[in-house]
Length: 309
Image (tube, rainbow, N blue to C red):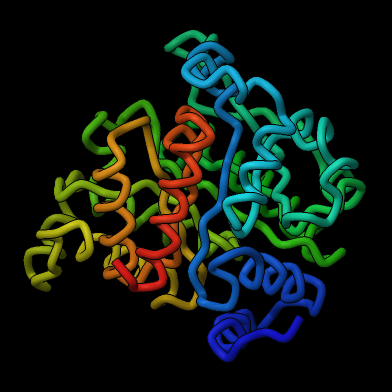
């Protein structure tokens, strides 16, 4: 597999990394139908942990089977498949080497009391990632939570361990906490801040939510106004997050969010593309559809990221 010039240019931004980490980033960037373009579509299936099985899989019962997710990611020509330990173990042998995988190494659940700090438990290890042949580990941090500083320390240690054995790190950076309003969680200033935090923690790939045009933090609002930062469109807000990812020197992908109509999914992808983002990490909007509909939607997303739609 020869890396394209586009991929080589992206890898050159990771100046402090080992050849193993760069090889695994290359492996993901060169995989699937978007291979070599610098764009990515990743299938994440950690929603059973986060939301429970019925809320996650009942709309498409075939999705209760872990093999379903491996197969649809392969058949759709995606760049990678991300899931917690049990989901990956359930198909790791049958699908070994057929698609790059990302081991989600921490998780939460919706049964926790509302008063509990926003936090996640470490549920897998770098050793598990190596055993399963994963290209990367995935780790969620909650900037804004009273537990966030401990989460930063946890991923700093795991990221160093992973890099030492050539495994890349993907950080889900989701603002969430006791002082953040629901609107604040997806405000553009807060989302850009979460992007920067993930980059500073050493993320090789950053995952954030698409932001609204709301400005939550008083001092940040002043800075956005004084410096005339454009946040008027979704593409402009994506561009602001890309700037926060070290001026585009780090791969940044955007969450697909809750299930919604296909046209909204396509509009999001166009905004990500036009704003300079690297792609989508899209779960419920994939596996909560029928296999036929999901493959058709993912096929169109590939065309959008190739600039053909």
